[in-house]
Image 1: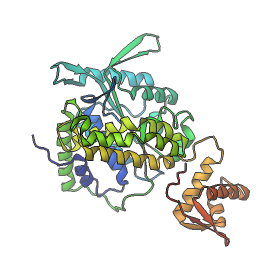
Image 2: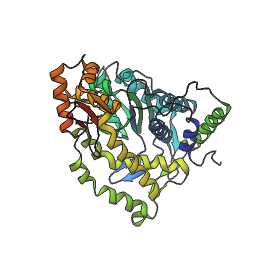
Image 3: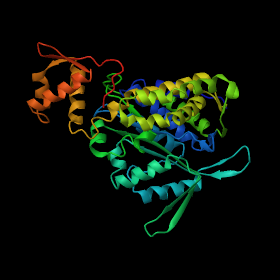
Image 4: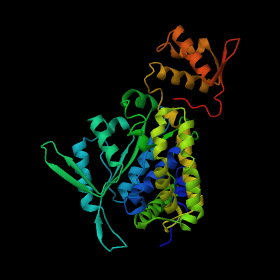
Length: 400
């Protein structure tokens, strides 16, 4: 059956054009939706292991940055296709029970063996990370961290100390939150550690455009119907990925040239919270490349342009992730520093008096002066002789 769109993501762009959400939120919600539709039905041999296209994605922006619409869309379309979507707020035990139930209905036939495989595949989708972690944050963070790796067999103990077993686990996450909530509520070991390093952190702080009244047009209804049709088609793809031209082809050479420079990236990154993410970028590039491949074709073959696209997207995530973490860290003035940077960035040029008026609830005059001196030393602002404070945000400067 022919697809309705040459690219499912392009169809999504057309569908979401008259919405205010930042385009990067829609783009990554779209990749998450494709990954959720693929589940474990496509894969890539990776040394002694196997890479599946499951993605953990977190949309981070200040309040009213329009994070909700892309998340709501993903949940709606996946539910419409009959794919398993987890409840918004859950305990670890309730979540593992949902996974077990999913394993009863999520099945596919392996074209290589002709065998019917059951999979415990589920999508965790929430407009508020705080809701997902409301019951027991520590347990949910631990279980999601563990299940990112698509275990063939996963054992866990119940409260009664019985042991349950899940087979062929596949978890996708699409979550949303604010920098302040992340900084104030996620435990220190989760930021930059096992939990957030598994996420593509997508930061956005500006609406795409102002839309006074978002009416649902007949064109949007047609586009949505076609998106459902094509996503259903994508969800039926099954098989093993390969590189076009093998290890001598352009796709593999492109990936290899980039990956051989990863150690330099580790040395040059000034935000230590991003180092574990960099360590996982290799596998993430492959996961994103799987989604980008099936976005336009049924052949499970990587091409050089797709690998380049996946690399560019993950490099962008790395360049903006520090802003999403807010002021999280051991430095007690970290949150104040990040907030003042944001204020100066918004104003472009301001004064000490104006910043004190904006921050008096958090900082006194001496504290604000110390924060500004720190930001000036970072090369992010210029503090002129006449007292004007100008945002310069030098290229390459990363701050959290």
